[in-house]
Image (cartoon, rainbow, N blue to C red; front, side, top):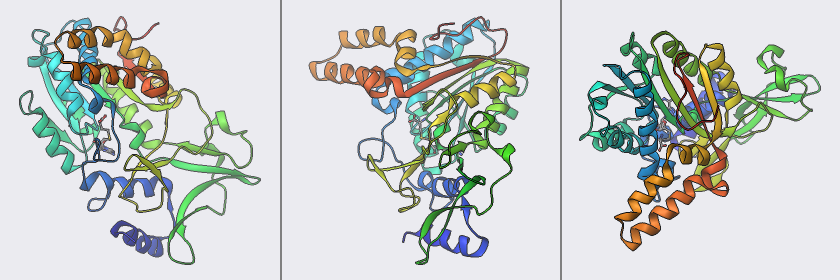
Length: 364
Ligand code: SAH
C-alpha cells in the first residue's frame, strides 16, 4: 500500500466512503502525495505525452490563434493571457515565440498561469524565463480578479480532463453515486451509495438511460467555465479549450488511469498514475451559451490545426531541416492531425465575446 492509499484508508474509516470526485481530487492534488504534486509526469520517460510535447508547431498555432484574436479585437493596449494547467510550460513558450512577431502584442500581455503543482511551476518558470514573467495562481478566479476590467485570452490544453467528476449508476430505484469504500481486507474498492440521489442531479438528456449505465458530471469544470464566461462577457476576450472528449451528452464510464504509457486499475497505487475522464463538450457549450458568449465548435483537433496553418508551418520548418529533423517534423504533424492519431479524438472549442467577428480555425 502506498502512502496515499494508507491515508485514504484512514480517511474512509473515519468519515465513510468518498465519492469519485473526492477520490480524484486526492489522487491528483493531495498536497503531499498527489500525482501532479510530486512529479513531472510528461514525456517519454514519464507517464504520458501531450500535444505540445510532440512538436513546437502545436503551441505556435495556439499563439497565432490568440494573436489573430488580439488584432480582431482592435489591438487593445493591455490584455491578460491565461493558461490553465500549463504542464512543462512548453505550449506557452512556443505560443509566445510566435506571438513575438506581432508588433506590440508581447508588450500588451500580462501572463497568468493556473497551476497547482509546485514541481510544474518550477518547470514553467524555467521554460518561460526568456519570454515573460508569469504570475501563478491556484484558481482561475484569482487570475480573473487580477484581470478585472481588461480583456483576456485563455488557453486550456488537457486541463479539463483532470478535473474531478462525480459518477452515478442507474438501478431500478434510480441513480446511485459511485463511491470508493473499503473491502473486507481494508483495501480500496468501488461501490454504490445505498440510496438513489435526487433526480435533479442527473442531466435531463440521460435520465431515461437503461439500467446499469453510468453518467458523469463535472461541477468543477462547469464552475470554472462559468467564471471565464462572466469575465469575457463583461470585459471582452476569447478562450480555447482543447481536450479529448465527446461532443454530445451520453452515458459511459470514461475514468481512466495511465502510468508509464499504459492503462492501469484506477484504484491501484493512487497518486502514482494519472487519472482523467473524457470532457463533455456539449455541457461546456451549454454553460458558455448560458453565459452569453459566442461558441465555435467543438471541431476536431486535426481540422483546427490545419485551418490555422500547421501545414504551412511544417513546410517552412522542413526547408531548413536536416534529414533527421524532417522525419521528426513529418511524424509529429501526422500524430497531431491524423484521424487515427490525435486528430479526431481531441476536440477544440472556442468561446468569444459577442462582438468579435469570428475566430480563426472554425467554419461558421
Ligand atoms: N497543458 C499541458 C499539461 C496537461 S496535464 C500540456 O498539454 O502538456 C494537466 C495540467 O493541469 C498539469 O499542469 C497539472 O498540474 C494541472 N492541473 C490539474 N488539475 C489542476 C487544478 N485543479 N488546478 C490547477 N492545475 C491543475
